[in-house]
Length: 109
Length: 121
Figure 1: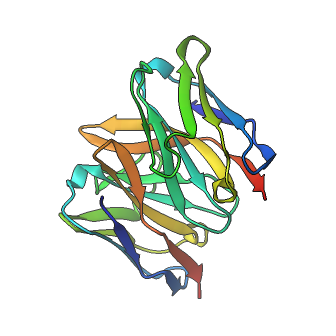
Figure 2: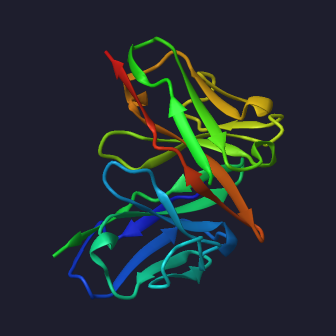
């Protein structure tokens, strides 16, 4: 079973700064099975990135994803006030099943 | 516009049963697998179950296997989750979500607003 570990647990930044969120898999995963979601309080998760680096429909280009094998990154190039939320990475694995990381909370400093 | 609307949540006693429903619109329902994902209060996301588009294949997390059953009615565009022998740790918001497969990738591209299940001990 794949385990996804996200870091940091909490990231404190100010609007305009660059955010870099990490997702590490316990063993190799195909990059096409890695996705990122954003969740704001009281709302459902929203798909941001699929296939490790492709933006979902309507997602601004300040969001980008990268990585391969066991190490993946979500980057927000210049934070907007609405970007402060919790971010989850997700892998689609055998069985089939979805596995999520524990989340990174991006908060305003 | 894709819409997913869950219903059926509520307060239930430990050991009891509850049936959640999700009504879908805005896409060809029978062409997509669907999933249930839950989130305990203040916690992260946990995949619960998936069902293929033709309803022939179902998959469950170990934590719910043997207690939960996922089904779908394609003519009615509905997805159901029958939850039996509920435990306190089943307390969560339950989301239904639509599979997305693009160029070999797998993700969940649309989610409902969620329905809260509270299990009292």
